Length: 162
Image (tube, rainbow, N blue to C red):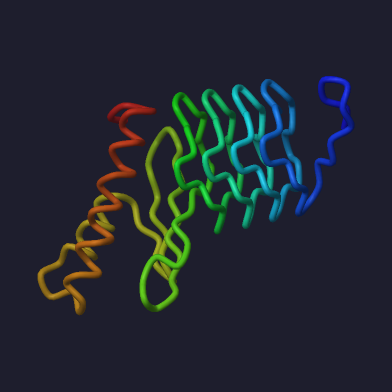
């Protein structure tokens, strides 16, 4: 794909680190395993894209459109997501606990969904499950509750109280 006169490979496992992809339409792209570390993705349309196992460490993603994108197991550590569109996106926390469970968050305008192992909860259900006094591993339960609260507050900031 030609971006600013440069042929840039938009494909699985592409090395796009440090690239300026701002305001580019990459909707429905397959960027599985791509290295987007420190890429400038300001205003980029990544809606419907596959970003499974992608490295988005320190990527600048202000106003990026991630609607219905799959970021399962992606590294989004220190990614800048101010004003990002996240409706329907699957947002990861890989290898979340000692059992190797991954923790995903899916946001829509109506609700935020938390997925861990075989569990799929809305905020209230997640809180009732992991904060329950007799949950088998209190430390793990507290860890999940903390992250549910954090992502719930992100959702409230994006969509308000629906």
